[in-house]
Image 1 (cartoon, chains in turn red, brown):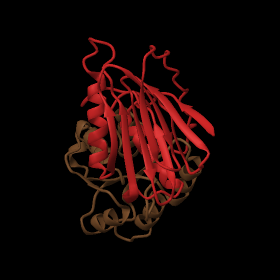
Image 2 (image 1 turned 135 degrees about the vertical axis):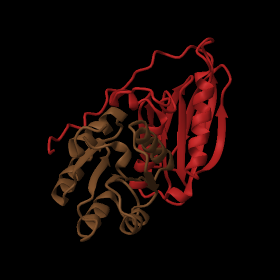
Image 3 (image 1 turned 30 degrees about the vertical axis):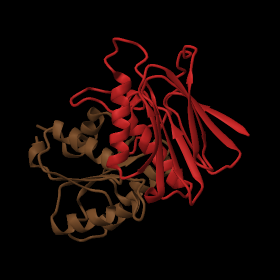
Image 4 (image 1 turned 30 degrees about the horizontal axis):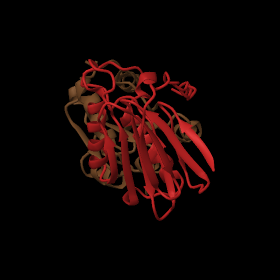
Length: 171
Length: 129
């Protein structure tokens, strides 16, 4: 079995039956999407839901937000043959691990659920909140997912380098 | 200096959450008349019957994608000169080149900040008041 570990800001969709996607979550959210007809599945891992109204955010920071991470994941699923109407979502994470951070995890979980509902995507498992970190494992071909609590502290997040789209100066 | 409030905008994206975010960004920039559609086919019918000055459209959509939508707009004798800004994914370099060939006015790579959207619009319309 090919195991792929996703970190904050990453997403992956695949139709390979030999692949397991996993991630470690604290206050972050991972959404697992699955199309049971096309046998396509995917996962993302994002830090925050969406910018507050009026909040100034640069393009690089936008990559941390769920509103972007969800679009990337949905597009990747559709490019591999999934249909939006058949998608089913599992939502994990959103723990409030560090006291005094103002319930970031709770807000992230609320965003994820609201996003999925707004987009009309069916909701499967939801395992969010609490005060403990989670390890999520997802079989994208079958759509099976599970989350287990992690006792040890999370390692410091490894944030991937933003993809350089390469500004094309056409205009 | 054109007033943002006078510019009618159509936002097209198949994701409701993204449409809402773009709408909010435009409204923060002073745009008052912002409509949105979740499918390019519906947006095309709408702007043909009720013209807008600016179309902000995603590329990656089912059925009719952003390039097909742009092509349909450009070949229409009535709405053909409508300003069209395309939103693309970061890896869609080829899409940008095709859009340029079809006459797109500007493009913006996702994810983008509201300031970047303002900059792209102002490059076409001039500085907004």
